[in-house]
Amino acid sequence: MRRVRRFVHDWLPALAVFVLGILIWEGAVRGFDIQNFLLPAPSSIVETLWSDRGELWSAAFFTFREALGGFVIGCSLGFIAAVVVSRWRLLRAAVMPYAIAAGAVPIIAFAPITNNWFGVTGMTSKMVIAAVLCFFPMLVNTMRGLTSVNPAAIELMRSYAANERTVFRRVRLPSSLPYVFSGLKVATVLAMIGAIVGDYFGGAPGALGVEIRRWVGIFAFDQAWAGIVLASLLGIAFYGSVALVERLTMSWHPSMRGARAE
Amino acid sequence: MSNQAVVSLRNVTKSFGAGGVTAVQSIDLDVRPGEFVSLIGPSGCGKSTLLRIVGDLVEPTSGEVVVNGKSARQARLDRDYGIVFQDAVLYDWRTVSKNIALPLELMGVDRESRAARVQELMQLVELEGFDKHHPWQLSGGMQQRVSIARALSFSPALLLMDEPFGALDEMTRERLNMELLRIWAGIGSTILFVTHSISEAVFLSTRVVVMSRRPGRIAAIVDVDLPQPRNADTREEPRFFELVTEVRDRLREGGLDEDRTAPGEGELVSAEETP
Image (cartoon, rainbow over all chains, first blue to last red; front, side, top):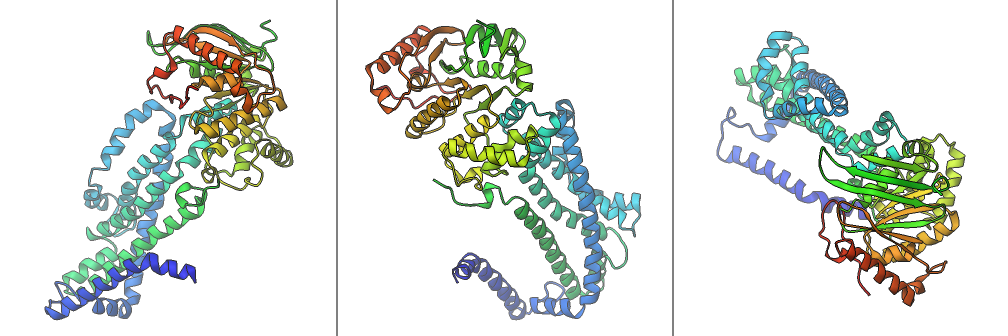
């Protein structure tokens, strides 16, 4: 009972804003008679989500697979690169400025080029752009995690005559986890953007980005909006599942709250 | 004499960088088995550096360091000492008992022996019942007890302590001082202890090494002849005050009164109050 009350107390304000926003949207579209190509009503978007569910879901899954592939490749490479770079100070000094600068570069602008290099209609070109997008934040975050260890924690391991590998496994890796997960969470969003925008520049028929563009071209705005909503939901679910894994693996972390003993 | 000393320093000097700051200069010191020796001095006098030189965590520029009859490096590799820092430096992802067991794990001690030893240590530092807690669920004083238990887990001959109670409030500090003496009496290890607090140094030690301002040299060594075992009343004895005054005078002669030291150099100025 208390848990229910607490849940309501924590989530009611956000839920209220959501419902209110949808109502205002619906009311505005009806009240001001807004044309469908400018903004469809939420009710008609939901209707389309249901009526065209087969086509929409298969398109969304196709693009999600592109995003997921890019995410796995980009994050793995980013992580490995961070592990390698963190070992040598000189390498770090040589590489990190570029990795950080890459965060300011609109990498998505390269999407037409990767389409050119890896084929317009295949999944590969989208995975590549998504992977490149994921790579840099993953590298920078993991790097930060691996190197921002309390120096005393390293000294302590040295006092136990621990070698570099043990220090990595016992100290650097676990203490970098919060950073690694924040890199992963940023990467989920970027992977979705990479895949969909990659599709916009041309992709396989049936990919979500391709379909959204086609629907806009033939004035099927309900479908286009339904596609966008679905992409958003998948993006949130993707982010949410990484956040869930974070919660499960880092139950020990102070940020996951708990009372102090006195 | 030097071959029976637990720690033996001969003409030890440490400079940082090329032609840079000299942290400690020409240090000669012998610590005998079972002694409790405190290093005290103004901020930046190199007392923490000296402790790290003994632990082979910092290499001296020149001079000879012998720990347990061997080179400092060999002593570290043989795990001849346990170390406690100002921060408890506990690993958040490990429970209290797993933090204490970490050195034993690295040494390849089997699970049952580890568990048995952890239970002993939890009793020793009076933390029974907290084995499943995570470090951040404990107060600062309790965290430092865990850190001490971890350092003692493999029964090292030497315990190095770098301002272990410097971040704690005065009351917790005095309580832990008392407990440390009780533990020390029980295990018979040798302790080398760095502190900012004159009264802490006098209360705990058998000898207080007073260091001068940078470059740190040994300005004086004060023998603390207060009887053992010491307790809360020790702090009220006239002899205690005499010794506090003597250490303070030696510190002044060394160049700087600890009351006037500026915070900085990564060291914390103690909340020590003059009685």
